[in-house]
Length: 233
DNA sequence: CGAGTTTGACCCGCGC
DNA sequence: GCGCGGGTCAAACTCG
Image: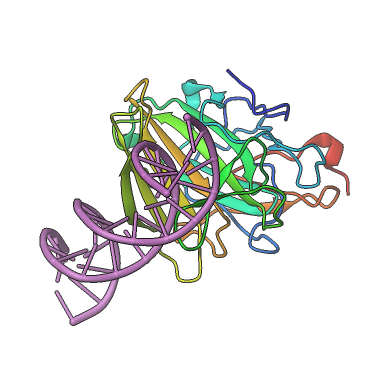
Protein backbone atom coordinates (compact mmCIF):
# COMPACT_ATOMS: atom_id res chain seq x y z
CA UNK A 1 0.00 0.00 0.00
CA UNK A 2 1.94 2.89 -1.19
CA UNK A 3 0.18 4.75 -3.81
CA UNK A 4 -1.63 7.98 -4.10
CA UNK A 5 -2.80 7.73 -7.57
CA UNK A 6 0.20 7.72 -9.78
CA UNK A 7 2.01 10.49 -8.09
CA UNK A 8 5.43 9.78 -6.77
CA UNK A 9 5.82 9.95 -3.09
CA UNK A 10 8.76 8.39 -1.49
CA UNK A 11 10.79 8.96 1.54
CA UNK A 12 13.39 7.41 3.64
CA UNK A 13 13.32 7.31 7.37
CA UNK A 14 12.47 10.91 7.80
CA UNK A 15 9.19 12.18 6.61
CA UNK A 16 9.98 15.62 5.57
CA UNK A 17 9.33 18.29 3.26
CA UNK A 18 10.28 19.38 -0.05
CA UNK A 19 7.86 22.02 -0.73
CA UNK A 20 6.75 25.23 -2.24
CA UNK A 21 6.45 28.40 -0.24
CA UNK A 22 3.80 28.53 2.41
CA UNK A 23 2.14 31.68 3.52
CA UNK A 24 2.87 33.40 0.29
CA UNK A 25 6.60 33.30 0.46
CA UNK A 26 7.69 30.99 3.12
CA UNK A 27 10.09 31.71 5.83
CA UNK A 28 10.51 29.19 8.46
CA UNK A 29 8.35 26.31 9.03
CA UNK A 30 8.14 23.44 11.34
CA UNK A 31 8.65 23.25 14.99
CA UNK A 32 11.07 21.84 17.38
CA UNK A 33 12.66 18.58 16.66
CA UNK A 34 15.81 16.76 16.23
CA UNK A 35 16.08 14.27 13.54
CA UNK A 36 17.72 16.31 10.90
CA UNK A 37 19.10 13.34 9.17
CA UNK A 38 18.28 14.07 5.65
CA UNK A 39 17.73 11.75 2.83
CA UNK A 40 14.23 12.80 2.81
CA UNK A 41 12.52 13.06 -0.40
CA UNK A 42 8.87 13.67 -0.31
CA UNK A 43 7.97 15.19 -3.62
CA UNK A 44 4.35 15.45 -2.81
CA UNK A 45 3.58 16.11 -6.34
CA UNK A 46 4.41 19.38 -7.96
CA UNK A 47 2.08 22.28 -7.79
CA UNK A 48 2.27 22.65 -11.48
CA UNK A 49 1.65 19.09 -12.26
CA UNK A 50 -0.83 18.61 -14.97
CA UNK A 51 -2.12 15.19 -14.16
CA UNK A 52 -5.24 15.13 -12.15
CA UNK A 53 -5.01 13.47 -8.78
CA UNK A 54 -7.54 10.81 -8.10
CA UNK A 55 -10.46 11.46 -5.85
CA UNK A 56 -9.37 11.11 -2.32
CA UNK A 57 -9.99 7.93 -0.53
CA UNK A 58 -8.82 7.26 2.96
CA UNK A 59 -7.84 3.85 1.85
CA UNK A 60 -5.02 5.42 -0.07
CA UNK A 61 -2.05 5.88 2.09
CA UNK A 62 1.62 5.99 1.86
CA UNK A 63 3.27 3.98 4.54
CA UNK A 64 5.90 5.74 6.43
CA UNK A 65 8.52 3.58 7.95
CA UNK A 66 7.79 3.31 11.62
CA UNK A 67 11.36 2.84 12.65
CA UNK A 68 12.22 6.45 13.01
CA UNK A 69 9.23 8.62 12.94
CA UNK A 70 10.30 12.12 13.58
CA UNK A 71 8.53 14.12 16.22
CA UNK A 72 7.96 17.04 14.01
CA UNK A 73 7.05 17.30 10.43
CA UNK A 74 6.05 20.04 8.15
CA UNK A 75 4.41 19.58 4.87
CA UNK A 76 3.69 22.11 2.29
CA UNK A 77 2.60 21.29 -1.13
CA UNK A 78 1.32 23.64 -3.70
CA UNK A 79 -0.96 26.01 -1.95
CA UNK A 80 -1.20 24.11 1.23
CA UNK A 81 0.80 24.11 4.34
CA UNK A 82 0.40 21.58 7.02
CA UNK A 83 2.58 21.38 9.99
CA UNK A 84 2.53 18.37 12.16
CA UNK A 85 4.31 18.26 15.41
CA UNK A 86 3.92 14.93 16.99
CA UNK A 87 4.88 14.34 20.51
CA UNK A 88 6.44 10.98 20.51
CA UNK A 89 5.82 10.52 24.16
CA UNK A 90 2.16 10.47 23.52
CA UNK A 91 2.38 7.92 20.85
CA UNK A 92 3.02 4.28 20.85
CA UNK A 93 5.78 3.61 18.38
CA UNK A 94 3.81 5.47 15.85
CA UNK A 95 3.31 4.17 12.48
CA UNK A 96 2.19 6.78 10.14
CA UNK A 97 0.88 6.86 6.71
CA UNK A 98 -0.22 9.72 4.64
CA UNK A 99 -2.05 10.59 1.55
CA UNK A 100 -1.90 13.84 -0.26
CA UNK A 101 -4.51 14.84 -2.67
CA UNK A 102 -6.37 17.77 -3.90
CA UNK A 103 -9.97 18.34 -3.25
CA UNK A 104 -12.12 20.63 -5.24
CA UNK A 105 -11.60 18.52 -8.27
CA UNK A 106 -14.07 15.86 -8.66
CA UNK A 107 -14.58 12.70 -10.42
CA UNK A 108 -17.16 10.20 -9.35
CA UNK A 109 -18.71 12.72 -7.06
CA UNK A 110 -16.13 13.85 -4.61
CA UNK A 111 -17.94 15.81 -2.01
CA UNK A 112 -16.50 18.96 -0.65
CA UNK A 113 -17.98 21.02 2.10
CA UNK A 114 -20.03 24.04 1.40
CA UNK A 115 -19.93 27.19 3.39
CA UNK A 116 -23.41 26.72 4.63
CA UNK A 117 -23.04 23.22 5.80
CA UNK A 118 -23.71 20.04 4.03
CA UNK A 119 -21.83 19.01 1.00
CA UNK A 120 -21.87 19.81 -2.60
CA UNK A 121 -20.58 17.76 -5.39
CA UNK A 122 -18.13 19.44 -7.61
CA UNK A 123 -19.03 18.77 -11.16
CA UNK A 124 -17.34 21.22 -13.38
CA UNK A 125 -17.89 24.05 -11.00
CA UNK A 126 -14.94 26.28 -10.70
CA UNK A 127 -13.84 26.54 -7.15
CA UNK A 128 -10.67 27.00 -5.27
CA UNK A 129 -8.60 23.91 -5.01
CA UNK A 130 -8.29 22.89 -1.45
CA UNK A 131 -5.63 20.41 -0.73
CA UNK A 132 -6.11 17.73 1.79
CA UNK A 133 -3.55 15.63 3.45
CA UNK A 134 -4.52 12.57 5.37
CA UNK A 135 -2.41 10.84 7.91
CA UNK A 136 -2.98 7.46 9.35
CA UNK A 137 -0.95 6.83 12.40
CA UNK A 138 -0.87 4.40 15.20
CA UNK A 139 -1.64 6.24 18.34
CA UNK A 140 -3.41 5.79 21.61
CA UNK A 141 -4.55 9.36 21.56
CA UNK A 142 -6.57 10.92 18.81
CA UNK A 143 -5.24 14.39 19.23
CA UNK A 144 -1.63 14.99 18.49
CA UNK A 145 0.11 18.29 18.84
CA UNK A 146 0.75 19.52 15.34
CA UNK A 147 1.75 22.96 16.46
CA UNK A 148 -1.51 24.63 15.65
CA UNK A 149 -4.39 25.44 17.85
CA UNK A 150 -7.61 23.68 16.97
CA UNK A 151 -11.14 24.19 18.04
CA UNK A 152 -13.59 21.36 17.87
CA UNK A 153 -16.83 22.22 16.13
CA UNK A 154 -18.51 18.94 15.47
CA UNK A 155 -18.67 15.27 16.01
CA UNK A 156 -20.48 12.73 13.91
CA UNK A 157 -21.00 9.06 13.92
CA UNK A 158 -19.74 7.60 10.70
CA UNK A 159 -21.62 4.91 8.90
CA UNK A 160 -19.97 1.51 8.93
CA UNK A 161 -17.66 2.64 11.66
CA UNK A 162 -18.10 2.29 15.39
CA UNK A 163 -15.90 5.30 15.91
CA UNK A 164 -17.13 8.87 15.69
CA UNK A 165 -15.47 11.45 13.53
CA UNK A 166 -14.43 14.70 15.13
CA UNK A 167 -14.23 17.99 13.32
CA UNK A 168 -11.75 20.68 14.17
CA UNK A 169 -11.11 24.13 12.82
CA UNK A 170 -7.96 26.19 13.22
CA UNK A 171 -8.75 28.61 15.99
CA UNK A 172 -6.51 31.31 14.58
CA UNK A 173 -8.63 34.17 13.39
CA UNK A 174 -8.93 34.27 9.66
CA UNK A 175 -7.56 30.80 9.18
CA UNK A 176 -10.04 28.35 7.73
CA UNK A 177 -8.00 25.19 7.88
CA UNK A 178 -9.95 22.20 9.10
CA UNK A 179 -9.10 18.76 10.14
CA UNK A 180 -11.05 15.61 10.75
CA UNK A 181 -9.98 12.98 13.16
CA UNK A 182 -11.33 9.49 13.34
CA UNK A 183 -10.17 6.10 14.35
CA UNK A 184 -9.64 3.51 11.71
CA UNK A 185 -12.66 1.29 11.71
CA UNK A 186 -10.55 -1.69 10.82
CA UNK A 187 -7.90 -1.10 13.39
CA UNK A 188 -8.87 1.24 16.21
CA UNK A 189 -5.25 1.57 17.22
CA UNK A 190 -4.83 3.77 14.17
CA UNK A 191 -6.01 7.33 13.95
CA UNK A 192 -6.84 8.93 10.64
CA UNK A 193 -6.32 12.67 10.54
CA UNK A 194 -7.28 14.64 7.50
CA UNK A 195 -6.15 18.22 7.06
CA UNK A 196 -7.96 20.46 4.67
CA UNK A 197 -6.99 23.92 3.63
CA UNK A 198 -4.07 26.26 3.95
CA UNK A 199 -2.87 27.91 7.09
CA UNK A 200 -2.41 31.60 6.48
CA UNK A 201 -0.21 32.00 9.49
CA UNK A 202 2.74 30.31 11.02
CA UNK A 203 2.47 27.69 13.65
CA UNK A 204 2.55 29.07 17.16
CA UNK A 205 5.20 26.51 17.94
CA UNK A 206 7.21 27.13 14.84
CA UNK A 207 10.81 27.59 15.65
CA UNK A 208 12.24 25.84 12.69
CA UNK A 209 14.21 27.05 9.81
CA UNK A 210 13.72 26.82 6.13
CA UNK A 211 15.96 27.44 3.23
CA UNK A 212 15.00 28.04 -0.30
CA UNK A 213 16.46 26.27 -3.23
CA UNK A 214 16.91 29.00 -5.75
CA UNK A 215 16.85 26.56 -8.61
CA UNK A 216 13.50 25.10 -7.89
CA UNK A 217 12.08 27.74 -5.67
CA UNK A 218 11.22 25.14 -3.16
CA UNK A 219 11.75 25.40 0.51
CA UNK A 220 13.39 22.81 2.62
CA UNK A 221 12.73 22.40 6.23
CA UNK A 222 13.47 20.16 9.13
CA UNK A 223 16.98 19.56 8.09
CA UNK A 224 16.21 18.24 4.72
CA UNK A 225 19.17 18.31 2.46
CA UNK A 226 18.93 20.10 -0.78
CA UNK A 227 19.46 17.61 -3.54
CA UNK A 228 22.83 17.99 -5.26
CA UNK A 229 21.08 18.47 -8.53
CA UNK A 230 19.52 21.62 -7.22
CA UNK A 231 22.56 23.06 -5.58
CA UNK A 232 25.19 25.33 -6.93
CA UNK A 233 22.93 28.21 -7.63
C1' DC B 1 -15.88 35.52 32.36
C1' DG B 2 -13.86 34.03 28.21
C1' DA B 3 -12.44 30.15 25.59
C1' DG B 4 -13.22 25.64 24.34
C1' DT B 5 -16.28 21.38 24.14
C1' DT B 6 -20.54 18.89 23.60
C1' DT B 7 -24.37 17.59 21.09
C1' DG B 8 -28.84 17.92 18.85
C1' DA B 9 -30.64 20.24 14.98
C1' DC B 10 -30.17 21.65 10.57
C1' DC B 11 -28.59 21.90 5.67
C1' DC B 12 -27.47 19.87 1.43
C1' DG B 13 -26.36 16.40 -2.06
C1' DC B 14 -27.07 11.82 -3.54
C1' DG B 15 -29.29 7.45 -4.44
C1' DC B 16 -33.36 4.91 -4.82
C1' DG C 1 -40.18 12.79 -3.21
C1' DC C 2 -38.00 10.75 0.53
C1' DG C 3 -34.54 8.87 3.39
C1' DC C 4 -29.73 8.67 4.36
C1' DG C 5 -25.26 10.33 5.33
C1' DG C 6 -21.70 13.84 5.80
C1' DG C 7 -20.66 18.29 7.37
C1' DT C 8 -21.73 22.51 9.99
C1' DC C 9 -24.15 25.51 13.24
C1' DA C 10 -25.11 27.18 17.59
C1' DA C 11 -26.96 27.00 22.26
C1' DA C 12 -25.80 24.96 26.43
C1' DC C 13 -22.35 23.46 29.14
C1' DT C 14 -17.61 22.93 31.24
C1' DC C 15 -13.30 24.47 32.68
C1' DG C 16 -9.48 27.35 34.03
